[in-house]
Image 1: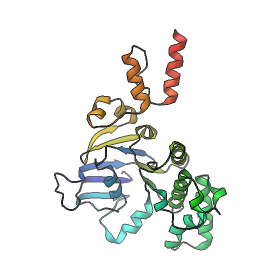
Image 2: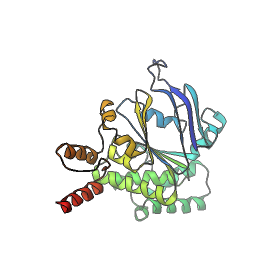
Image 3: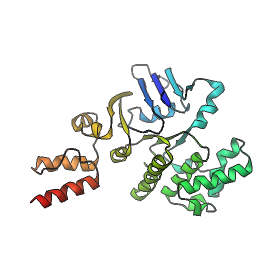
Length: 280
């Protein structure tokens, strides 16, 4: 059984009909330990979809379950939300305390976790995101990437099974983006945490096990990153770009260079060009 399961989920904002709703008949599962990336143009329904996964939004029809718990079960909604933590675009909107370690402890205090246990969990969570040395710092003195890592630590301290990320790097510079993605990738690989990641940066989705592409509230494409991003024509038809190296490899092939279609990353492009040069 999937850790998260969506069955024929529809969601309409006020004034929308089922035909023009934000999410229209979406069904899929997320397995334990999986990294799922959700991509799509603005207004495609991807951010609405992720908010349905922890009960921030309830389906207009259909069902969302987390480990068998329906998000519509009012008496179990907090049990569900303990299993599914959420990271938003702007870390400043998630930081509430004047000291880093107090911010990470905030959610635990609200859950009534004993003080001694809070201390251990906060220390462990900050170490996981490599922010332990900043425990006594003021969050507003941190960089954007560091703030987002503190926000992640605050979620990790509550020991969720799933980390939801709604465009967590959208407001960060390239170095901040790398900080956050490297942190989450390491947690996924070393701790086995399940990740559902909404992004408009196509290259970020290369880290995923599976990619869903949303369009007009529906799943338009689904598959491994390579399966999805090799469908360059399909992505362009949906108003989406492909990872920069995939686009570059296509252009180089059109110029007659023998670059494999499977090249997606900088490392793969470097290797392909080196092999090409050695063959000359």
